[in-house]
Image (cartoon, rainbow, N blue to C red; front, side, top):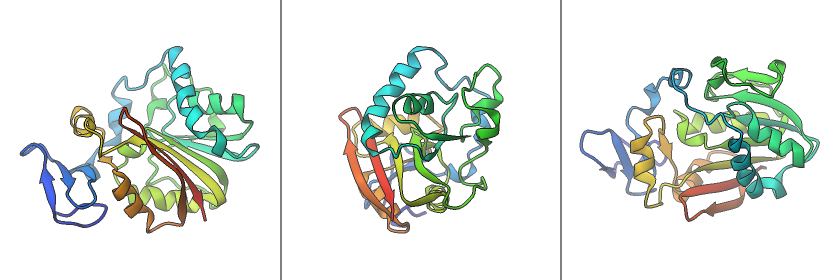
Amino acid sequence: MKCPICNSEKLTDLVYHQGVFQCQECRHLFRQDANTFDYNFYSQHDYWYNDPHWRRFMRTYFAFFDDFIMPHSPTIEFGAANGDFLSVVNEEVPISIIYYNELVDLVNPKYDCIIPKENRFIGSIEEISLPSMFVDNVFLIEVLEHCKSPYKVFSVLQKITRIGGRVCIATDNAEHLNAPDMIFRHREHLHIFSERSFRQLLTSYPFKILLYWNSPVGKSYIVLEKT
């Protein structure tokens, strides 16, 4: 078995027979069975926080990215549940909204999505067909760790993002002390990046890093620009 990011065979089995490994070279955390994970998990669980305080929490994410958002531009968010984050963005920076729900939460009728149906795309990032070069702003807020194939995800991002467009990412940090807990406690967490493994991933795609900040609480905040 090899690391899915750097192909190193130097792997640490974090807890014997639990199927979670860390690469000794790039420090990437991953599940051995990531490629077989069933995304229907999200339609079968009460997964998202559906309460009025959630919007306040979304504003804390917005604060990291507001200086990088391109106003009055086509925008897409992956894995947005009921669209709260996009609504927060649009209150502060007027954008053209295109919505897509990677986590399949919208099959649950109790989620009152604020994005019109005609602007929603239901399906996994890796498999959905979207037009080329059609957005300037892309948001993945706590989504990348849920994806089966990071390389397929970035192939989609490369295709849909215009030159000069921005990709804003919030995800777990594999180098944080609590990172193994985040992958063991959440079986839907499939890949957790270190800065080294993320930079290795980017070598295959035309993006440059505008911001990479690892917070003390174990999150990585990343802004990319399509080149």
